[in-house]
Image 1 (spheres, rainbow, N blue to C red):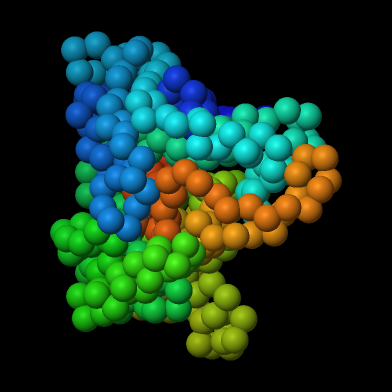
Image 2 (cartoon, one colour; image 1 turned 180 degrees about the vertical axis):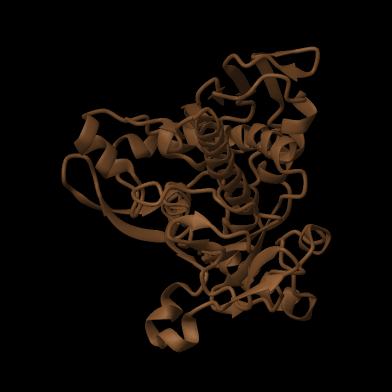
Length: 365
C-alpha cells in the first residue's frame, strides 16, 4: 500500500480514523528552514472538523506535535515526524460496518484487496488521513517561502451543486475566501449556496462541487518534460485526495471545443521577461512552468455517507438496507480547500528541490 508521495521532498502519512492518532513523516526537507508547531497548527485548524454548522461535528482539536527533525525552531535536515492524537473517536458508531459495505466507500474494495479492513470510520480510507498531508504541506510551504518568497498558493470553493462563484483568479484574496465558513469568494450568492448545503444536510443528503487553485509568483522551469510533468504530478496529487473525481488545468476540457488560433498563448516581452498575453495553458507548457500563474480545478463528489436509507449488501452477500450513523460533512469542499493547497505545496516543493539540484549539476560542468 503506497503511503509515500514525492521524490526529493517526500511525505509518508500514517494512522487510521479511529486509532490512537494520525500523522506524517517528512523526509528530504532541507536544514535550517524555520519551522515550529504553530506553523503547522494554523493549517490544521483550517482543516479540522467541527469548525462550522456545515461540517462534521466530530470534536477534534487536531493539535500537532513535532516529534523529530527540528531543533530550536529550525529543521535539521533529518526526518520530521508530526503526530496528531485522535481525541473524539467513536468506533462504536460504526459497529454494523463490520458486516455491511457502505455504498461508494472503500469498504468492499479494501476487503477484496487485503482480506482485512479497519471498519471503524473507514480506517485508512478515511479523510482523516489528510491531516498528514496538511501537516506535510505546511512544512513544504516553509521550504517554498525560503526559495521563492513571493510565491502564493490560494484555493477556494468555486462551485457547489451547480451553483458557481464569480471571481478573478488573478486578484482573488485569501482574506475574502476565509471571511466565510464555505471559503466562497462571491458574496452575491453566498447565502444561496449555504442554503443549498443546509437543505441537503436536513434531508440526510450531501452535495459536491469544485475547488479552484491559483499559484501566483510562480518561477519558470519547474516540472519534468515527460512522465513527471508539473501538471501530471499535480493531477496525481489531487486525484489521490478522498472524494476527488476530476482535475483540469488552464483551459482544461474547454480546450477540446477551441481552435488552435484561439487556444495558443501569444508571447510578448515585458521588460526583459517573456510573458504570455493569455493563459490557457494554466502556467505550464511542455510539462514545465512558464512563470505565469498556475491555475487548475479539482472536482469533488458528494460525500458518500448519508443519513438516509441506501441499498447495499453484507460481507456474506445478503442484500440489506443501510442508514448510516456517525458524523459526516454534508459538503466536503470547505475543509478540502487547505488540503488542495497542501498537496499543491508538496508538488511544488519537490519540483523546486529537483530544479535546484539540476541547477547545481549544470553549473558543475
